[in-house]
Image (cartoon, rainbow, N blue to C red; front, side, top):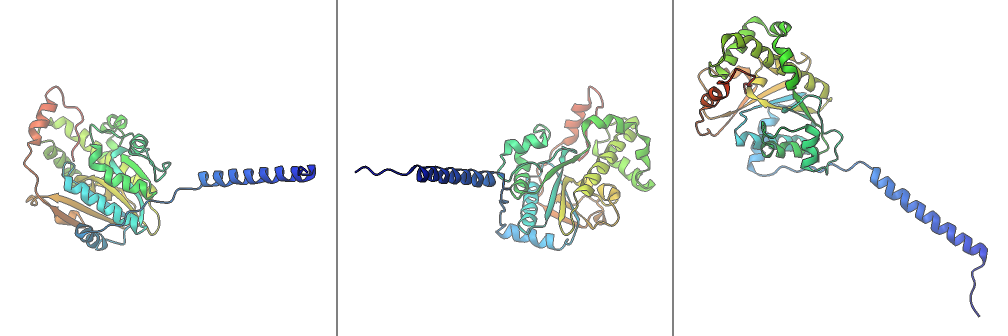
Length: 300
């Protein structure tokens, strides 16, 4: 005799199947909406241990300023190790970059986001800043679920900064004179004197923009890291001059080769020497750039 399922039981079976299906969808939706777990690298090796010892000597700090020489590959490796170390310890609040304009951020990205998505979020200018040099540090922060933020003065604001006389009083008199001299030397004494004040204002506006970005990213008990040219992290002339006095700020200069006679060691909390680089005639390149007109080149 055929076996029939009573209608009431059949209806109950369908209801159970429907409920199971709905539950599965709910679980799937819940998983899809759940934040991704950070992908944190554990630093290892002698280089990582050496970097950890240097970082430990600077902590605790609210803000860690790392001043690089932009074309020094070893400096980018050190930066990546510092970011990895702080992220692995759960101490990294954010990474701020001179290499991206203020207002951009990776905060909306997931740890699994691609490098292409990261470059897009940061509106990365690969011509000015080769992505391959900075991607290890940037992607380590992204993988750890830590925001990477642009900190530099947008180019669209540079022209206004050049004419803003209020920027002339943002540094003490001697520091302003030193900054102006830095602009002269940094541009190989090739700029007309009429350009020194406007170019110094841009430098100061950059430092103020970076300082504001850092202040907004500070988290109690964690460290915001700035990656920038060494001139920007100078305690007497750069970003530290524009940060709130109650923040614990440490400035590191990564120095390729021997120190110049003019270097003031007290401008930084620590100087980390790295091997010298081959000699490059930057002044010849700059002279070629300035032949048509003195535009807006930037000092490291």
